[in-house]
Structure formats: C-alpha cells, structure tokens
Length: 107
Image (cartoon, rainbow, N blue to C red; front, side):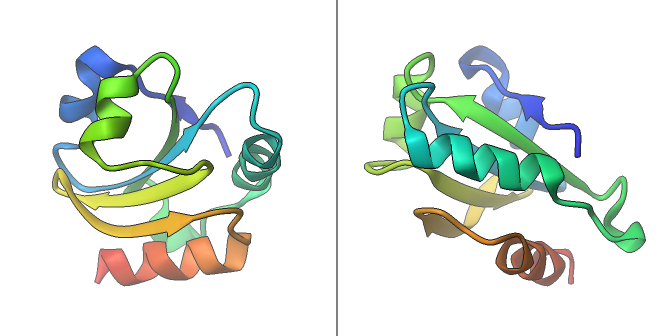
C-alpha cells in the first residue's frame, strides 16, 4: 500500500472528509518501524479502494497535532471519520485487526 505522509499544517484538511487511518510514529521508534512495514504490506480489499486513506504523521515534526489527539505512546493508530477520531489503537497492530476496524468505519 502506498502510505501518505501527513504534515502538521495540512493535517486537519487531510482528515476532514471520509475515513482516514493515521499512524502516529517517530523515526527512532523500533515498534513504529514494524507497524510501518505492516501498513505498507497491507492490501486493501477492492471494496475499500478509494474510500479509505492511510498515512503516517511523524510526531517529532508535528508535536502539537500529537498532543491534540493525546498521543502518549507510539505507535498509535487513530481512525478518523469526517475529521473526528472514532478509534484509537495503541501499540503494534496486526493487519487483520486494522482491516476489520476500517471495514467497520465504512459502514
């Protein structure tokens, strides 16, 4: 999967509409690298293509955004729907768990 890279100045606009999964991470975080690899290898089912955005936000480059969403431990995945957080997953997550959460968010 091609992951988007979100930036602090445009973050609110990036998550404003639809379903967006954001991986809050840092370059120095080992488990974050593992989570990133899982997300990159993850394949969205055909029915999710074009309906879900998946990307990463480096907390060292966007500390205020991380603080806004109360990210205290990384990796943290937050699932947004129309700009509102609807699910927070802290720690390393398996692809099947992530896909299940995405499917629920689309209903």
